[in-house]
Length: 514
Ligand SMILES: Nc1ncnc2c1ncn2[C@@H]1O[C@H](COP(=O)(O)OP(=O)(O)O)[C@@H](O)[C@H]1O
Ligand SMILES: [Mg+2]
Image (cartoon, rainbow, N blue to C red; front, side, top):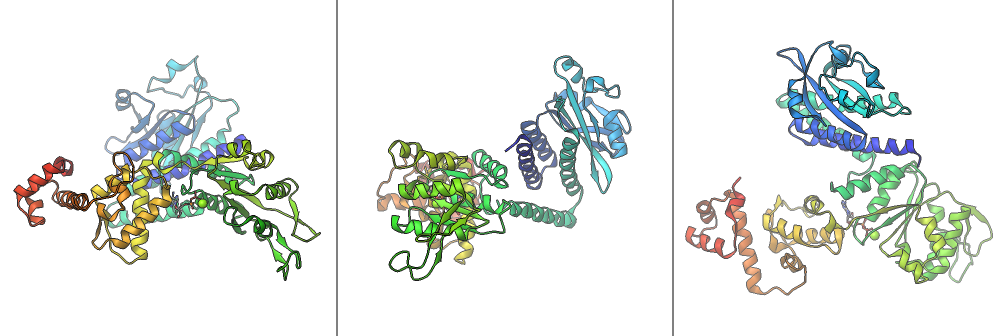
């Protein structure tokens, strides 16, 4: 991928992130601040401000800023038409100053730029924030000066960000029904964007997973071979799908072959097909998966388990882009993008002579590593909620939420089977749950004792009863926001008994007081 493609991919990832931030936050200023933070993190923005019109004084004031001293910020204001900021507001058109040291119009109200002069030249891009074609504010960014920067492209980029900000500001100014309608519209837009990039069913917002999303957007539209690595159950297949549906081959087939599931003798005929009479039982010509995937994507799952003789044939297809059916002489041209996945230590397999080094290099052009679930704890609850909703719907149950103790158990478990294990556990819990809250005792014993060591222990009747008791007491306390008297009443017991149990289980009532 060249530098331009890389920068486009980064922009795309930013649009997604900004869209999500603006749609997902109640407080507009917090959301705008986090947008500026995103810009400074990924787009070389040194300082940024969002100025909004103060309707009382008819002046522009800084609503949020990034990279500036708070005290400075409060002082600064511009009249309409004053300085670059005021002019951009008045005209509704962007202004670009490639080198601010050369620009007399530059007022430097913030007094920060002068100091840096002589050391590091800066560029300034200022774009209007327009609602119904009327400016409501201005987005201004200081960038490190680069002579080769494409200022037109950069301005378009910041203008799109300003449009997204405008939409959020517009929503913020509305009330009641109108607001709800627009919010719904926003959710719909967001959904559309996600579906377009087909991340809609990939749950998770943790840093490591976001990095994966970014890699997917980078590589999807190329024809590059991708190698997905990571433990079993981390979502490799899901990512393979996302890459395909975000690629230019999206309308063509996505074909999967599991290299581990098929016996050695069958895998070659599966991959390359065969001619009639190629072997006993070959009564008619059969197309292989390579042919079925023509124009699309072939996903080779568990590539580390592929036998060595098939590895040689696969290598040839990768090099020559052609193959023959088993028992056939006709050479078939192949236009297929390969995505391979493995949970094996490939370097070790090469050392051990189980995997050909030359094939490995052909496959390992762009590697994406799927982080294990235990390294992205913040995704556990998002996923648990997602699966709860999914399986409750599927099994026609009205389970509304997961109890606090059950959440604690999910959060402290080490998830050796990753997302697949979590999914199975939640489905099973949904099946056995007869109330509208999913409790700790609906989870398997491995999680009951997971807290300390993560080791498997048999659960005695006594500890199972205790776990259940602790669970419903915490739940009652949650309902009553830590009020023991009310909780006791809810559980049909006395305050004294409840007090005793609370002490016995070391429950912290303050935790529920919110
Ligand atoms: N981030 C995720 N969001 C939603 N579901 C996920 C996620 N990661 C994995 N899953 C689900 O977990 C299961 C295992 O994922 P899979 O892609 O088959 O893992 P792998 O191929 O790495 O073994 C699948 O049912 C998949 O849909
Ligand atoms: Mg798999």
